[in-house]
Every structure is written in C-alpha cells, then in structure tokens.
Image (tube, rainbow, N blue to C red; front, side, top):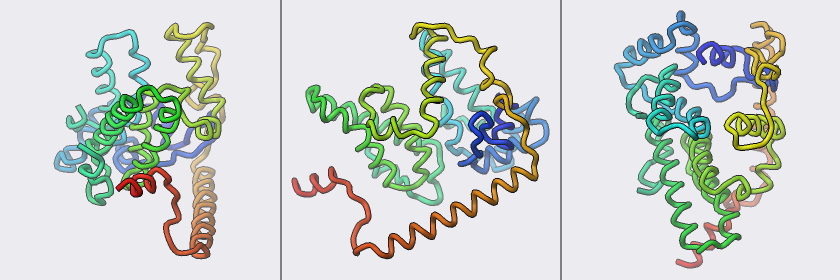
Length: 277
C-alpha cells in the first residue's frame, strides 16, 4: 500500500491519467520522507510526534470505507483492525479509532480534524434514517434524500470534499445505488471504469456472477500499465492545471459579478422550510 500511495502522490492515478489532486500536507510530507516505502508506520509516527502529537487530519478516513465491503463476510473486529492498519500507513493518531451546526465545519483552524469528518457522516446517516422512517417508505422522498443531504453538507463549507466523500459512502450504502440521483451517477467522469471496478469487487466477493482474474487486469499494475512520468513532465502538467484553474476562476468571477444581487444558489428544500416557519 505504501509503495502504491507514493506512486499516486508522485504520478497521479496513471490508469486514468489524472493528477494527485486534494493532496494534504500530512500525506504529502510523510510519503516524501525517506524510508516510507519499507517502514511507513515508523515514518508516519515520527512526523506525528514532531507535531507534538497534535496532527489528526481526516485523510485516512476517506480511504477506509471500501473496506466495509471487502470485509463483508468477515467479523467487525477484523474489519476495524484492517482499517486501522491502512490508516496507520500515514495517520498514526489514535483519535480516529448532535447536528451539523454543532460540528462547526467551517472553523478554519480545525476544519480538517478527523472527528469533524466522522461526525458529519454519522449525523447525515442518522438524518437519512429519521427522514426515511418519517416518509413511511415514500419513493419520491427517498430518491431526493441523498442529493439534499449531501448538498446541505457541502454548502456548510470547511473540508467539504472530504466530508462529502465519507458521508456519501455511508448514505450510499444505506440508501442503495438505485436511490442515488441519476444526474449525478450517470454524469460521473470515468463512471464506466469505476462501475467496472465495482463489478469486479462484487465478483471477487461472490456477490455477482462472473470470475475476475486480477492477473489479467493491467489497471492493477503499479503504474496502471502506463509509462512512468518524468519529474519535468509532471511539473509541466501542474503548470497547465494551474493555468486552467486560474482561467476558470476568472470566468466564474466574471459570471458572478454580472448576476443580479442575491444568492447564487437555488436550494428549494431550504425555501420550503422557511415558508413553513
């Protein structure tokens, strides 16, 4: 896992030719440290101790939820132990082992704290359970629930992408694939590739007919069956990405300034709640 993580940090996801976006300070620093490939936990612990044992970001939490499926036919203890081992590759703080307002998700000093992400996921899952029970099985309410809750979570700011990643995994597992919004699940970039990998995992677990042969899947190779990218080429790609991002920001700012005054977001369920009050 450590070697593959380092490849992603330095090369991106080669099989899809994507950049290593969303890389946090802890992961970037730990992975780049000497000895990480062979002793990742030691390197991660040295970094953690160097911060006064205060570093407890949420990066490892968002990569553990697939283990819930992988350990489907194993005990909870084994699943928890495996998740902890995977987390300790970069995050050794033991911490990972009400409502959204109480979490203060947009606190700039602590928005990356792991318990905020964990708490937001648990809160949304409970909200979904309550609303599903209140709707008495209403199909329309259930199909809208995922988008409504996740959008509300994201609009509260903070480390929104990580919070939504973890909470989305819990909500998706509870509601089921068929109740995800069509315009989201059918609009995914590389969606077909992702679903193919999901099907492969289901075949390995015996949840779906067919036989997956990993040795014949080039995507599972260290560099995804693609050539290694040189450091100069990666730097060039970063420059292109920065230029494209800056251009989008300018276009967004220009479009926003030309709009009528008022909120640029349309959240119909919020307006309905206000009317009821």
